[in-house]
Image 1 (cartoon, rainbow, N blue to C red):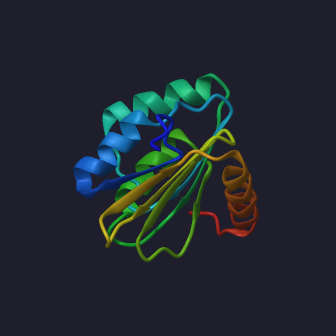
Image 2 (cartoon, rainbow, N blue to C red):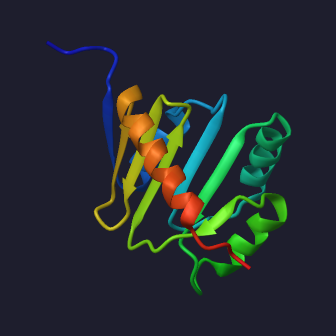
Length: 137
């Protein structure tokens, strides 16, 4: 039996990653991210500015090194909720107690998990880590 409403979706490669990102719900309340690249693009900046203006809670735990420093600094001019995390190849997005996207960079696999219980645990883990994370100067 195949259920139409997939609770776990897997994408392979960049194409799979971008398809999942496109299909994810837009945050009504919050969007918490663990960032691998902190990629900066003008259209992403516009989206973030709009979401901040609407009062969304956006927070990022970013890998911060020579490779990401320039982009992270650009983001810090737009939003202050960026902190450091040690990261060896994972991107995560937790949205509104509804969806968690996990991207395993080196394996080139992205999962989208639509499960409230999982989201709430991930949110709790994120917020604890965020609370204790180092500020980026």
